[in-house]
Length: 282
Ligand SMILES: NC(=O)c1ccc[n+]([C@@H]2O[C@H](COP(=O)([O-])OP(=O)(O)OC[C@H]3O[C@@H](n4cnc5c(N)ncnc54)[C@H](OP(=O)(O)O)[C@@H]3O)[C@@H](O)[C@H]2O)c1
Image (cartoon, rainbow, N blue to C red; front, side):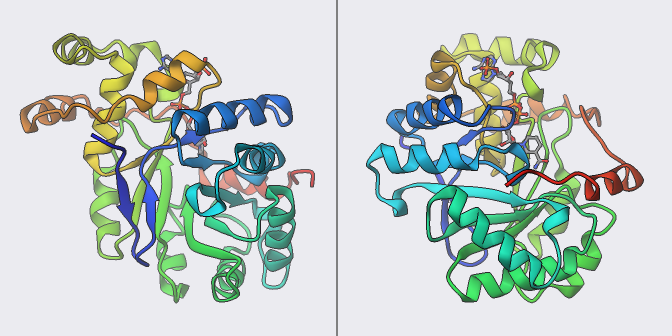
């Protein structure tokens, strides 16, 4: 079985599985993590301006020898970059840092600040060929407002999503727009309680896989895009080795019973306002 792709609402085909690089320091660490992943066959990297490692991602892409069209790059704008005119400038700076002439998927990282102005510029960037697909992350209270103002409907929404919080309501809501769910904290940010749930241990024994591989396979079969973070080569290899088995419908239903509404991180809208005060360095 080979890796799977999701078709977005604009027809773009995105590798469903990738590498997340949140908290990976820029420079050698990000370059090595991305290069190792690309060598293993990963074709999707999820970064953000706020992670401060877009340069490392771009350098790895160059050093990999792969064609630009073979690798999917997602990155995210921070609220201090939102606003008509300002966001287009921010996108040009992103392209410089990523050392590329287009971004596959560009997201609004947070639902605060002038996200409507930013979205207008993102739509312009699509027309200019600087960005292929656009989407959002962490939108909740302001989701309807964004959707009402959007000419191009979001291709993806990136949110916390794992078996304790599978985002089924949001998924149903976004199906109307063909918007896919991208899972952050897909393995609960490494939480041993989630990873060691007995149902995963049982299925891991049945399929000759690890508990983490069972969780990642669950994301794939839920139709989510998933990009666990790791800099550990063994974890990286294991995480990608999930395309040679399939969980049954009964097993998916058993995992669904873990849904307990538990989130690892939530910022209220008021707390999110502080995001407009922090500026990532260029
Ligand atoms: N849009 C947003 O606001 C947002 C927020 C958070 C995250 N994200 C994105 O989602 C990605 C994933 O989220 P995350 O990195 O925070 O959490 P995660 O992928 O759920 O968990 C990462 C943790 O799990 C460990 N791990 C990875 N593979 C493992 C394995 N096979 N066995 C045991 N432990 C393993 C990693 O440690 P090792 O490095 O030691 O393997 C790391 O400590 C991020 O990198 C980022 O791209 C987006």
